[in-house]
Amino acid sequence: MQTEGNATEVEKPEVKVESTELNPILLKEELDRIKATNERLLSESKDYKNKYSTLKSTIENETKKKLEDEKDWKTLLEKERGSNQSLNENLMKMKKQTLRKALDFEVAKFAKDAYDVEDVIVSLDKESIKIDEENLSIIGVEEAVNALRAKKNYLFNSNKKPSMIDDRPGFNKPEKKPIEKLTINESLATLKDLMSIRE
Image 1: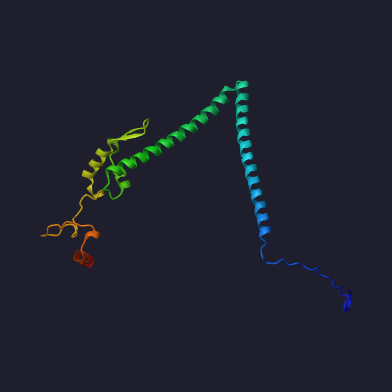
Image 2: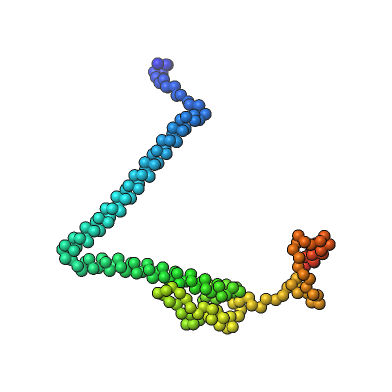
């Protein structure tokens, strides 16, 4: 169409606006399609991982066979030594971690009244503790903790002072009853005692 001033007016196509209500059938179809795609991708991913590991082991075996065929024993030996060394390093790390956890456990077992178990471990006489790396066992921790307790007793809470609730001067300790068996008067007296202690 033409209007004044030779300007042309372009007709705009009508845009259909879908309702904002969700169609449950379309949602289910879309969800099923997404699930199927997800399962397919997961399956393909597993296949690719398997193919990769198979190819990797095949290449390693072919390289090893090639070196053997060429009688390049020196390179083959270096590869095996490198592999063996990394395995030994991993084994040593695991042994150290296991022994450290065993030491922590043993010290915690014998130093239950310690303020901080790590401080006790650092302060222990390492020469009195025997570590068997082959059997992953530790011997002499109890003696070392007892010696440390005698030498540095400030690391331990061994001077437990009786509180006023436990021992009152001049009173015989009454027999403690469970709360359910207390009479009303006994319950009130206990409550008053507790309130006086809080103040």
